[in-house]
Amino acid sequence: MTSNTPHIVLAAGGTGGHVFPAEALATTLLGRGCKLTLITDRRGGNWGENLGNVNVIRIRASAVAGKGILGKVMSVFRLGIGTLQARGHLKKIKPACVVGFGGYASVPTMFAATMSGVSTALHEQNALLGRANKLLAPRVNKVATSFENAKEVEAVAPGKVVYTGMPVRSQVAEVRGANYPELTKKSEIHLLVIGGSQGAKVFSEIVPQALALLPKELQKRIHIAQQCRSEDLTTAEKAYEGLEVKTTLKTFFDDIPQRLAGTHLVIARAGASTIAELTAVGRPALLVPYPYAADDHQTFNAHAIDEAGGGWLIPQDSFTPENLAQRLESLFSLPRTLQNAASGALSAGRPDAAEKLADMVFKLLPVNGNNKDGRKTA
Image: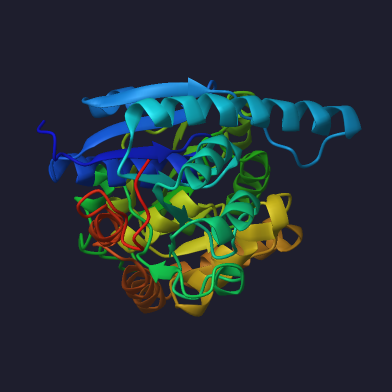
């Protein structure tokens, strides 16, 4: 590394929806010769350490919403401590730019960065601006979005919005454009059920009941790979006993890119990372938004894919065994409909999202010791 090597700080942590795009950007920036530091919370996991030459710093952070008065006071206190910690680290690092990925884990670092005068940017993964990013957006230089018409972003950060798309992990990007598996009246049908990083209890309950309602001949053609929570795995296994379907049930799949490439239909929640991977590979999905997600943002994500023709939104209160069985039987008898939805999903993806996000970051880098707007760097 030379003295002219840009040092960029990433602020991320929490769920895969925040972590995966940060990881994808980190890989791209490392490929461009940047020096990177990840600042996350103390529960941020070990993901940053898997990227090689990335310094990882952990600070205090805490969510504020949904707690009692004492909890909110303690959360604000921890956020204040985290901001002071982050400010101290940023003074030592002297980064050229700080990029946040939403979630409470990013808030202290982004607050500290905006107070220091360094160039700052946010990436919003969902179709609705998240609470943390809504708080930070007016203070930063640029806000990148995963969806072209992400709601509330322009109103909060007018003139700062850049549509980059949602970066995905390199393993997912590598299978983009894989041919949609042929589906005939007699071929095996591959059905993939994923419920986010922890699986979804509702899928373990409803999907087996729905498949039990299908004709035996159709059951015999189905091979279902389903992610279950550890506490639901045994129950799901018993629910499939006596059915004609082939099953692969696990608490975690470490080969999701390959399974996506080989599947005919996905049943999933509508989190940001799930949507990004579906559109990166180009696979149709029945999307059941998590009804308790903050500000119901998963419903906005699912609507965007539904409108793009890449899948179908099913509210959880309509996700019944009878409705699902009817939908599956209809779709599996209409392979052209599934193929068209696969094309719709693929067209909604941005294969160059990580590069576009990196381009945006590079435009914010200081020139001759000054930021693009003329301010001195920290």
